[in-house]
Image 1 (cartoon, rainbow, N blue to C red):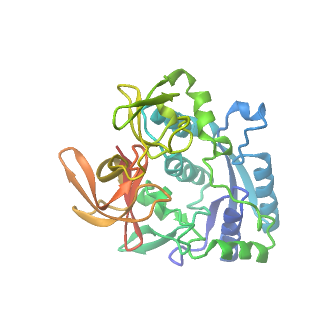
Image 2 (tube, rainbow, N blue to C red):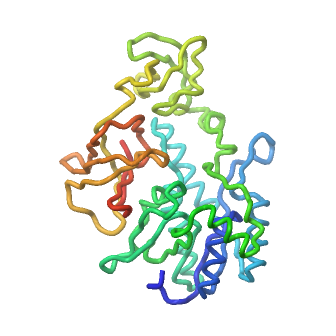
Image 3 (cartoon, one colour):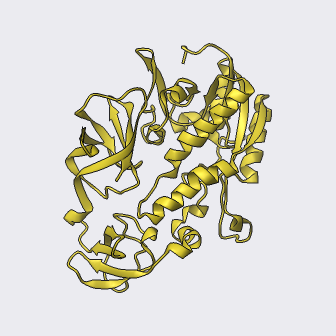
Length: 362
């Protein structure tokens, strides 16, 4: 990161160990660090029902960020992005589910809020750079700022950052890219941070307890129309509670009593039918080919056909692929078939550990 001069930097601080260590490392490197805690939308019923917990913007998280800022001797501002977050992230999340897709709100949030809106605030503060605790590396090549997979492959978060623009990458630092999670916790202890042993969250921040089914049932109540559950052989085996509640490849929660297990193969939105199979190797669960839309290439569009590696969801393994385009748009041809290629999820592309970009699976 030596290609950046020492200067003021706006560091997103969530109250967790990763962002805390990121801030500490930046200060150690000589930056004048200004911390920001971002408040996002959360459902009103969180305050009414103890069974629902949202830790993203909790008082506990805010207090934790304050303690770290005090320890490091830096200022901490609280930024309210609730309305913007609700409008750009949550409303889109519900819309995509109504259409039968399975969206990834974290991808959109990074593009529009954690980097987009945060950079706008940095401009307002007269600050050129921002930093986060994401596990990803940035580097320069031929005058372009680019991203690549983090040292800690298990914690790498480059998948969620493929929609960033070249300018957003140019103005961002990722201090944790060269560290493993264990090393980060050790650094937190070295810096004397209270977050050293704080439990991390891998949840969608606005979905309480990461329990999506009751959350969608509550907010999409008017859009849920029960219908038949039908096998790939055409046999009716049960009733579904509304197609937006299910996703391709799903096994748990289908609620077909006495037999199974079953796996979701298709959501027929026109007929309001949930298609399932009792064969975990059913051809309907796998694809060699799919199309993508709303593509984003971080620096510049590559030449096609593009031979690369792809991930069709965050926890999926890398798969060999060829990306190409025709009159209908971009499509992806896989060398080996992949399970549960799901509309609304992101296909993200890599070459030699460099993050190239990606698109939304249609």
